[in-house]
Length: 388
Image (cartoon, rainbow, N blue to C red; front, side, top):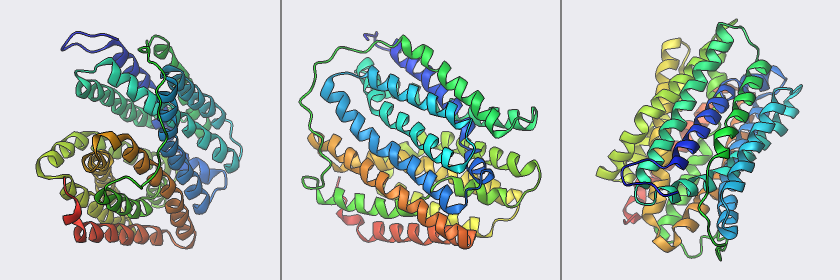
């Protein structure tokens, strides 16, 4: 859609509202999901399997849906189908009777996220071609606001209204369906089908980029599912606090992530992505090490805040560094390779974490500490190869 210079596209506002409502819905489920799995008999290995599968499916499908969207010249159909899929399986998740049900419904819910992300971002880019930074910034702000409010709402529903897991997830599903209303009014720009080719290959990528993808995969092996951090905090509280405190800690994680994402992005522009990413990898190692010894509320407050800062440092800057190291004509391929390799690594990472959890929870975090330190050392050793 056309928009005047300085104004915000109607499409961007509508998609921002969709993301606000959908993230509000998703973040009502995220903090209680590991505890829901545990309540239905799932052990550490099952938590790792579900967490890794969720993350992996989403990352890999982003690449495939982006390719299909370019190939067909259509955007909205993929975005709509993605949001509908997520809403439907959130609804079914509320009626889960066993961890096997959670495995199926939670994983299929992430299929929706994978399908919608790349085509949605394409609509935003095409709606504000001269002010894409502003468009994505506004969308991200609404998306993040939804995440924070979702964590607040789930706490209020649990603590003050004494709602159980299933009731909370059912309410979240209803909100997800409500997010489809503004999506109906989004108008996509007509595009001719493109002669796109799906290239998930390292062959033509620069050596420096291949090296970074390898190092980022080492880190991804350490970066297991957030669910283990939630369950670790739960171990030290009893009665209603065993549910309420992890929810509030997850809220704290979201707040710190939101506050520091933009500043660390700007910092990487000034001092270099390498330094900032190394800092992020090291802080993750420090955070995992802290979880080995944490046994008080104050310790968990500090560590969840640090965990939020780690994600604020790593999430955007890794993608930005991939873009820096790739040529313009291979940028989409480079990002596709990056998302796919990270997606394929998340499942074994969380499975290893889950297997160690079943032996002793501290081993999970010692594993995260040691592997992320390896990624730090590798980055420092090969840093001179990353020419921008």
